[in-house]
Length: 284
Image (cartoon, rainbow, N blue to C red; front, side, top):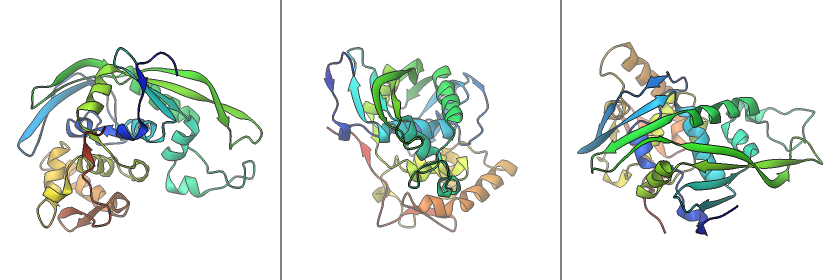
């Protein structure tokens, strides 16, 4: 893929940096508002930190980044510390499609092809990520600032079979992640399958899944974590209509959250025995 120190072991790269969810780089909604760089103070457990974002980053932007990491075809570290990924945009579009949309079939497509998320919508999300900058300070003193998450999207010379147009090839992308974002991935990563999260109906449910998957469920209380605690982590006001709406939408997301091993029971959320969260740390 170009000049680099060495190709990376695919298993060594996490799906996302744990701090991205904990510091709320992405707003807990699918319809984020434009932020102009105000500091957002966060807290979980006995630690915390803060971040600020210039731009509008929500859970659909997090979906794109998670799916890029999870479906990447190749990766390399540049000498400057950036991370370059070889990406098949069709795999992103399939991952972003909702369950209903994925179930539809079109006579114009191959019989076994899966309908995908709009290419124009995907490009818009990628451009919004590229336009945004972020800065953070964690409780342990680490910090990074005014950096881009995605610095560049370019076409690769490598192509792949196009399932939507039989007999044709489609070109792949090369995505360059900024040094600060790559450093966050190295500092503490979270390993999970982002596909079930991308299909959660509500942004608050997606944000809850992401922050919970950065925690070791074996250290949770016997009956799980209080939903009110999770909403506090996500920055939802402690009272009022916004809190009531968040509770309702989280309850409506229960069936989808179960696909990621998170079970809502009454006022608590716990990890299922079959798929417990806790894939956080460093590998390699």
